[in-house]
Length: 245
Image 1: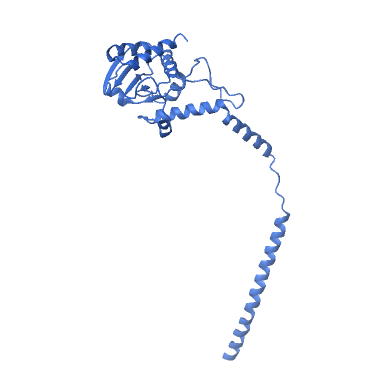
Image 2: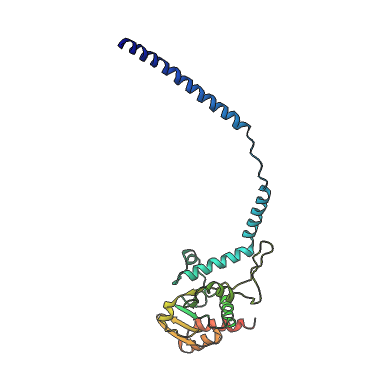
């Protein structure tokens, strides 16, 4: 009986390599057939390819247009100046300073609020943009919740009758003043500004303040009666001359 069992085991072992060889052969045949079948498959053409390419080209053209880029820069500037309360110019701006009429130790702060008529703020923005004076800053204490984007878009618009139209064809972006409006409540507290508009002139740690709904040239002229700054006097003269250009 033991002898017969040994014979059966030997016969069984002798069939294992044959079965393995057959399995390997079958797998290779299946893989080869799969490669042949794959070579015969044709991928159908994308019927929307032309439409997609046209849409992509139109989008790229709109994005690169001067009008859209101007709008984009306005939004970038708005976000940069609104989101960060104590905004300071970034490194790129510091590397390319703009020389103005004020000396390095002189600053002029114009404090405004949303309660001031749009026409008045529009006049301030026009005057400050024309001066190109880095020593002047326009400051706000804050915004009505949910209204800051709409408010800034409105008051910085040069032509108040213009309407932005950002459709895909023939976009219209209204021209706006390129003047930063910064959110700095700390300066409102520092100079005890409780009414707007108000102007503060600071020089070497000393400050002069005036409040009233009047032209920027008039407010600065009143301050300079006490401050007696030749640079501020030059600034006032420039502002007055701009009225008649």
